[in-house]
Image (cartoon, rainbow, N blue to C red; front, side):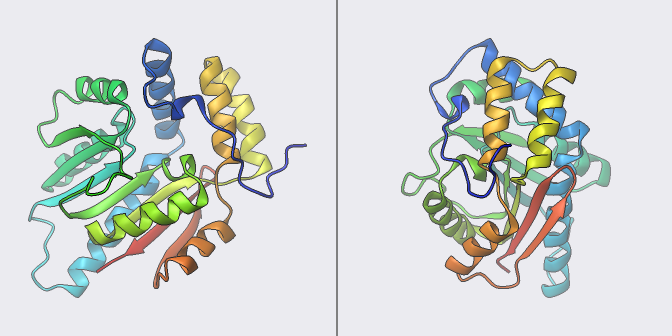
Length: 243
């Protein structure tokens, strides 16, 4: 039986930011496909809508009609950004969307997939570099990104990001538990995942979080009024208001 008491420190193949090739593209696209089918993108969208509603309640001048800037950290193939762009178009909202990722090859794939979206842009950068995010954004998203980092790196990253988020952060990441671990093993057969996707997917779950982990991060960062909710499919939605 796999041990999920503590976060794993095993590396993922995808953590190699110089990685390129069709295997990587296949892995990114399969992750995005599974995330959509299981409703994962909706978890981030729901958190975004909560922050927007809070801003409208607290600020008389804030309106959904103005331009709303959104940054997606660790954007992969850009699926989350395209999902938000489609939502904004449907609701007649003015979203300016940007994705950043440390893998240049992944970003080129994201740019190709997003060619029809004028309000999406991308940049290749390391978020841990000083001054990597010079301008503030209304909302910053971390969708299935935070688990790639060690605890101290998470504290460092969130500390920087909350200074750049005018309304808040939305964290959407995996629950570390036996049930999703073995369910993912079954999904590997259903979706015919390649070996890299299988290995990285299982490690991702073991590097995921329990509620107490997120609560400890919030305590270390001295955050108040945060919201941590369990969501389907076996993930946590963590909303960190900054307004």
